[in-house]
Image 1: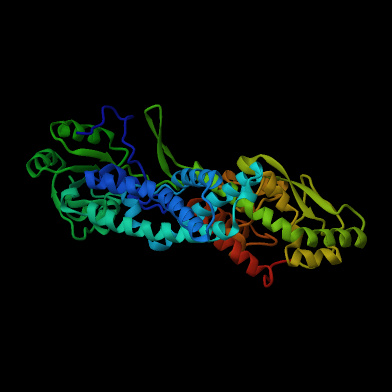
Image 2: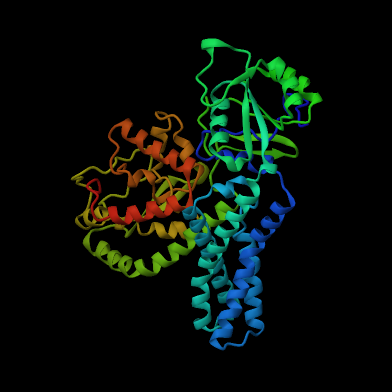
Length: 494
């Protein structure tokens, strides 16, 4: 039996089950699915399958093209196999991997393989071995590999679903506490058979109209009757969903459950909190809950940075001739510097210098900065044009290369405006948990231009916080595509 020995020792199930960033499967999957021999076998196939496909495809294409599979190709196959095993590592046998749609799987594989190819290109450039490989082999290999991995992944996922959903993997569960977290958990368990849980019912001391409506689930008894029921009915899992304030009730219940073999998880009521990237961790055995954190932790941060750097290099190759022409026109059309530098807040509220093409007759940076307005007399004739199509932001590509900004993220505001709005808008500074971006969720939803009213800035901050809560690589791609379209038809650009 899993039990708590004191109030501070809580299992790592602590999550907000209704939060988009806290998928119930990701919370319970690895804790509750029984790892049978068949499950382990399929999991091992999932782990090593990408590397196998990478090597076999490379060897087959070299054979078809009549290219000797020499030491250079052997080295490439080995490095690609290692990178693929690390980067394309699946969710293994967690139930989250069984819930992922084909689109999600395809996007993850495409992004992961893109990262593998990018790293191989960098490695080839650094070691100067690119000339030893035939394009007739590498190009088809780069294009066919993700498709082959996707097909194999979907087949293994189907096999894993068959194995995991067998009756011998099913576990009987009860929930102690009829409240919002418990009901949400029950809905998740009933809606997702891949969690391998059969919810038997609830236990609760309250009766009558004090209980909310329960669908397809009944109250089996009072909390004092739970231990006997668990032993009599061979219940496998108990979820304690009592309010945080009822610590003593939880402790009493745990004492009663010591004589059972059921696994016990505590599901605290933290719906009162506005969680951003909520997740659990432990510090040398002490469990902690992330209440407000950046979405770019672990491999996510690496993926974000590599994507930013790669796309920005491509964008700079295309934009440099345009930037050179704009620099000449700006220099000749009005007095002042070509590049306008302004201090703004970056990651974690640290001050950074942001570059822009000068679009005004003035270069304001200090405690008092007037926002640009429509028909603002400070804007130069060429400045009006470049602001309309956001060309004045192009120098910020160098901010991205420096690692001070990202392609997508909350737009950075002048320090003067930050200091003004952080006092007026609750949670304003949370937007600085990530790098500021050239574009963001707020901008593609119409929140750009002058913020003459606090409500306009509140709407912008609301979108920024939504970005932190729900970030995915796909979201970044969508924002970039929407930005490109809006550049040519945004009436709020001035």
